[in-house]
Length: 239
Image (cartoon, rainbow, N blue to C red; front, side):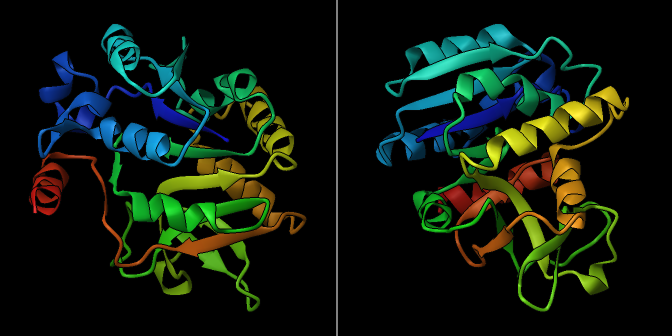
């Protein structure tokens, strides 16, 4: 199995740290953020980790070259003009049509989170924490009565949602071409500010895809957007 880490973003909310350091290489408890993901994938026996670069790409490539885990670097030439949907889209060829795990470079986690999603089944499995207080910034998950995902968006009403998508998904080989076609369609429609989750949301709304939440509530993870998140992650992972 392969994995992809999206590490192209500018990380503006972590400036000035990210003026000189790619967000995914900002340290948490003495280790680069994306180092947690690379180590977890290596320990789980992944054959390859695809890393999508953009901002300060040379530093990310140097990190990948020094890794004991096999990494393939793909550059996103539109990292500063298109949102993260395009970073996932440019990884399509490198992922080779296999089942893969997608994570964001600012998602810091320990192996039990990965173990949980590897054991899941479905076209698209979304790691979901049900213990988060949902607000405007959280990427929220909405379910139907059967427990299948019907919506993935920051714009959903928190009252109707069950938790937050933490930034890790398992995409099956059968579903992969469907997802990439949807990402291409969003790009053709000019939605350059879209998240990859907008593709999930559109596909879920058609009701033809088996999209499932994977409960990771209580497991060690942190999504780091700003200095407050960074301080909280430092305390969590130092412990």
